[in-house]
Image (cartoon, rainbow, N blue to C red; front, side, top):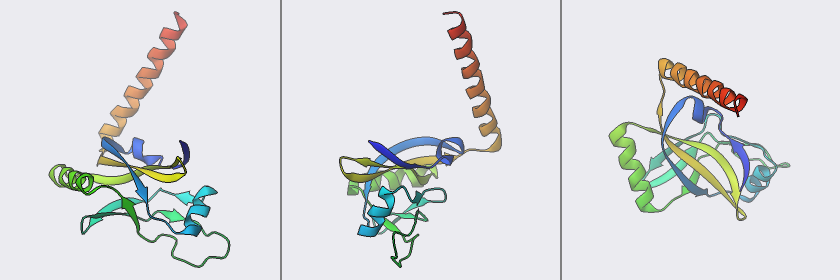
Length: 145
């Protein structure tokens, strides 16, 4: 598994509920551009329309002289039962669906999507404080080994 791009904000700004791996439907020039690492997941999000999942605002940079829409919606490849499961969780718990990373797996481009809940400011602070405390404890334990 070779990671191509990561969404840095997915771990810091959200509370992760569930993760899914899915394929993506791409054109030839998009695959070549992704192979070069010219993809950005910063503002990307997923939506469900007509029992199909789509990824929006994923920017794939221009490859050579191709003229196309670089942020067009792209279809995500999931089984119907997975889409229905995601849809029910999203509606019940008022969650968001965001892409976490895009990577190669056995010559296929895969995307890891997350079901997340947006953290409030005080939750972010608590998460940072907990992370700092864990780092201090690791230092102390390593010192006394």
